[in-house]
Image (cartoon, rainbow, N blue to C red; front, side, top):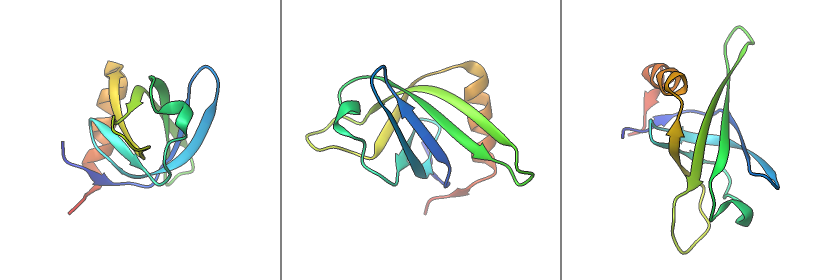
Length: 102
C-alpha cells in the first residue's frame, strides 16, 4: 500500500501498558512510528489510537487493532489487523489529503 508523510500523535495500549509516539508515515495497512515499540508490544496485539488534529483545533480519533511487524529486532512499524468500517473510511479520507512518500 502507498505510504504517506504524516506526523500525528499515536497512543498504543495493551492490558498492561500504554505508549505514546508520533507517526513518521502512514498507509491503509499500517504506520511507521518515530520511536521503536517497547518490548511489551512486540509479540501481542494492541490497540492503536491515531489522534489527528485539524487546522481548526479539533481532534479526530481513529481506533485500530494492530501488531508489531514480526522480526528478530524491535521495530517502529505497526501493521493494522482489524479496522472498523468507519475507521477504514476515515483513514482513506485522511490519506487522500497527504503527500505520498517518495
